Amino acid sequence: MSKIANTSPAKMNRRGMIRNLLGTGAVLGASPLALAKERPPVPAVPNMKIIKMDTIMTGRDVYVRLETDAGIVGYGDATNHFLPFSVEGMLKDLEPFIIGEDPQRIEYLWQTCFRRRFQRGGPSTGSAIAGIDQALWDIKGKAVGLPVYQLLGGLARTKVRVYGHVSGMTAEEAANNARERASRGITAIRFRAFHSHDANDFHDHKAAVYQQIEYLEAIREAVGDEVDLILEVHGRYDPVWAIKLFELAKPFRPFFVEDPIRHENPEALKWLREHTDLPLAIGERYHDKWDCRETIENQYVNYLRPDVNHCGGITEMKKIAAMAEVYYIDLVPHNNAGPLGSAATLHAALSIPNIALIEAPWVNGPRNPEVVSPFPTVENGFALPLEGPGLGVSFDEIAAARIPFGEVPNQPRLNAKDGSVRDF
Image (cartoon, rainbow, N blue to C red; front, side, top):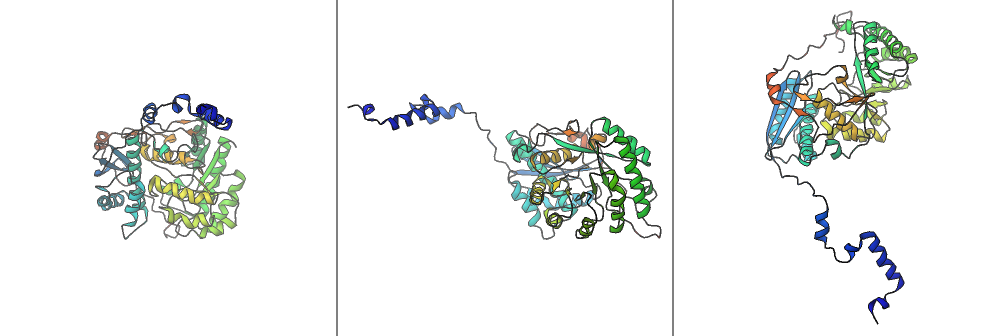
């Protein structure tokens, strides 16, 4: 009796099913080697070491350049406009921890730069590690030929809503600028008043509050109800005056009030939270996940605003976002960078689930496009993904070398009427 005759119907059915699923050739003799040849090749990732680290200071920007022995170069943005020389010094301090290391060990190198040093944290450390971290992600993306957002888990969204800025020495000027932004499809606008007071190195809480409301009313009238307005306070007010601002601003429906008080004592936000139902935001002066912890755990704000150039880079922003996600807090990343920092912001935002929108200073007019390009494309108020490998931008080192580093911008040295110091 043949083997076929002795085979049960159940076994025959299973064999037929296998043929249908795998194909007759696979069952009847196609070798694993032949099947492997039909698959597209997996790109080889070279073994690499970092052989050189440079700090490039050009215009108003501080960049990190990492070179590998495989010929791949990565760039990161470490710009902190008010502390550039401090960041430059911190990068020199971190260089020994980077040279000779494998650039693909991004998490290991982040931990190395932060934890192998006895003194930790702060704006200089946050920006220096951010520049290194971005350059490492740029290298990794270039090595495998993929945009960074693909390495971060892929697209959590296909585009990211942006907001632009307006300013003006008068409410009318600010309103006209807002009308122009809205005419180009920008659906969210951030502003603050008291520019005229800054010019005179003067701050008075009462005058500033009422000027904020004057601007808010004028801009709301100019753009209508369809555009969201972000009311920037810059940490200027004492808590009692922040409460007064909330009271007067509520009829004009701000999307959120940003930095209503100083950032050093997050617990002070608790009192504000108890006295208003307006959405609040803070975070651009937080420099790592530990700075953000208290604000997140106590749910003091509705939106958190880390900056990818200041908070330790893409790696740290992903962790901050995950902490905030547990408490249903969305991120609105701060960003006053040129094309490189804006690209890093966009890649992170594309991969993070709890992003509401991102700051997009380039919609107000490009800055230094001759050194790094392009800025992300914005359509109908949304930034579209950058599709090149790595961070998806090009860096012109020759152009950067031609542009000298400028002077550190003067911050207003604000005084009250009695000559005491006020916050910028």
